[in-house]
Amino acid sequence: MDVTETDLPGVGRRFELDVGDGKTAVVLIHNTGRRELFVRPEPDADAEPLFDLDDEAARVLGSILEGAHFQPKATDLTATTIGDNVMLEWYTLEADAPLVGQSLGEADVRKLTGATVAAIERGGEVVQSPGADFTFQAGDQLIVVGSRENHESFAAECA
Image 1 (cartoon, one colour):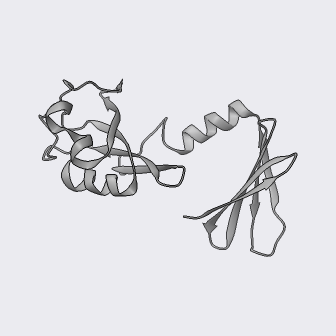
Image 2: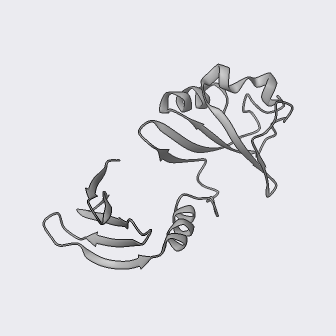
């Protein structure tokens, strides 16, 4: 999915994303932190304003959209891109996943795949930066950081 970025000197930066059906989402981030959201209903049409957000409201909305507050059960994998090649992805371990029953140290995920297990949610509790003695269980939801290639290795070897 391509995002077009345009520097707007003295104003901030504009981001545009094709959201399907010929529509484009436009986000203008002002140097002040204010965000304006627009939709362009057709490629040649003017962008129509939707709403403005202050910095705090934009961050809360962003976290909601990326799934920090709710992960639908039907979704086993969610991805967020950071920069050009770093991705944050969520994985739910099934009972037959290779990691189940292993500690993070035993699994040696980073050496095996290049990916890093950043956090694990289990039973509504979140373990940030789990230690080597953390043992994986079926149903654990892992937040994993790495390149696309790291994630491909992680999915094949661990999930």
